[in-house]
Length: 356
Image (cartoon, rainbow, N blue to C red; front, side):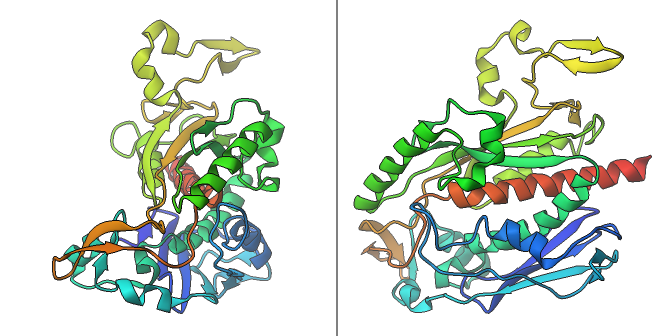
């Protein structure tokens, strides 16, 4: 099992949903970056459970502790160990399914791969692990900020309701909204859809868009290790993610070359692209335009409806999943998507610095 992400800025996560703690070790962070627990905590607070109509009612403070790698408020260049202790796990909610494979979950595949699994909340396959990604992403964001690079994301579509009317300012204040949607009218409609899903003991999916501003031209590799490939891999690796597109994405299949090509001009000896169908990447290398990607998330698998499945004895049974679960992953996944793109870009940044 590969628990490490990155080549130069490496993140190794650990912990299970109902274990003692969740955390990570970040190795390769440059020295001299100003960092404290508050910097990381403010990012974790964006994804923590216990709030919002679409979120789980599990109540976790997600209080982070820095164990190493920081001295007098600055990174030392040595491994940064981060940890938060689980506080509100209720493992008894899962005792009746320890021998059952829940539909849509990784229960079956983990059992087939390892011959053993932690059935409490999904164990290692739980989205609780994304806490470590967000914590590491908070550090990556600090490194990127020194280079003028900013990463931001928002819910583009939720429960089939798309955001259509919004501004850059709306995106920048996205964490002031409950569903992380910049379009207030769309958010209201999506909220009604979520209420319907709750009544029906069901869940809903959605799409998150992420944008990186200030990325210079030249990040990424031309063949293997293309920036687009690294981004796609990082985003599809998030729990419940089922699809990724960059720039125009799947819409490009319906366009002509004359429509899709981004015209290049020069103004005061500065290169400018008149459109950004490429999503800020050409030939696997950043163009200097905004990097734009979208991630599709499936409806969450933990629903309270009665479902058909099998147990370890291969008997056909019915199951009703108890416990506290999100109705949609999207609102809490926004900072996770930001974190994963930040981790890709900080690695690309360090690779480019090493090359030069």
